[in-house]
Amino acid sequence: MTSSPQSTPLGNLTTVELIWIEKRVEHRIRFGRPSHETIIDKQRRVVGFAPGSVFAFVRWAANDFGTVVSRIDIVRAVLPAEPYQTLPYVRPGGEILLKVAGWDKVERVLQRIDTIEAIGLDPVEAAPDYWRQTHNRLVAGATPRAYSLEQHRAFLLRKRVTS
Image (cartoon, rainbow, N blue to C red; front, side, top):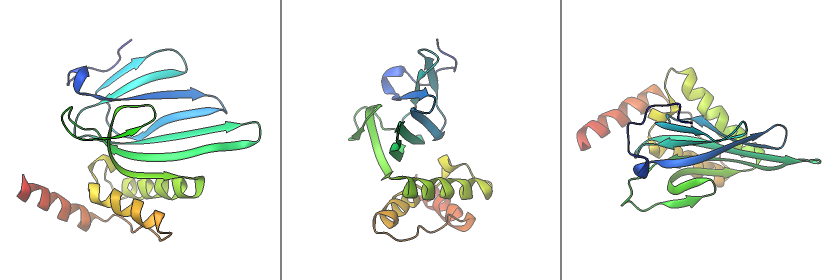
């Protein structure tokens, strides 16, 4: 069942399989603008993202003893001819802007996303370099810098000049 209008042919979309099994598995989109959705059943659906769009994909799983997987990936959907990196549940893959595992790091990324939303911006619109810098700082054990309106304005100006 398709519930969203398609603005891009399915062959050009980056698709993500989402799963929700209560207290066991949760694969969800934290932010992003899917251009297509297919509902498979009550627990599974597939969303598609147009080339160039950015989304955050959260994966969490638990067993009887607690959390076994906690990850977040921020990905840019690519055109069919572009190189890409592969990710589980993402087809064909995408340009990975941020990739972290472990609840402490995932929580810090979620807080960064909340902070961006609190200043009135959609995280989809944030500079890709911000997500790369956040990834690098987390991997190095440093604190990621906050995204500011001034940084966003500078990104938009650079984008306008280079387009």
